[in-house]
Image (cartoon, rainbow, N blue to C red; front, side, top):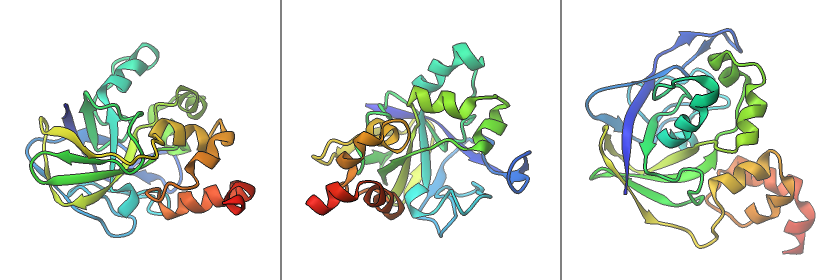
Length: 217
């Protein structure tokens, strides 16, 4: 069984990218945090700020999870990494986030239920946050993207809460597979064609890029 290592939220802070503001700088908080399905462009966590509402937030990206083990895998390159440094809301321990199946459901603590929706695709803001040239390519090549989740049942989350997989779709398409399909291995896109749990925008992208496979069905 996995656990929530930390719960992280971010305020609106200046950054030298896009509009000049971002909520990517997320930091651990004490005590329980309410989690609910957000409005378009909003975060699922109370007190968390999203500035780039065009590309982040909303129901299908209500919560972002990244594994503490994957952060540790970057430390030989980046040095010590604090929870939340990748902009994740939940830093987990003992959860195979890359191996999570699209659509699987996690019970977090006694009440909260989240559903895995899609991998995080890196952007310029992420690279600016880390002050790392070539970061988008490095993160893409590593294929440890973390997972976005939607809120199925609202509740509270705090550090130490257990994370249990309570349902896993039979299609078996993982966050890692979806990430490679969207980035470095487009030949994998047909595997995503029948994954109804993907966000609508992702399903439309798959349909545009694999028209022959979809027509054949």
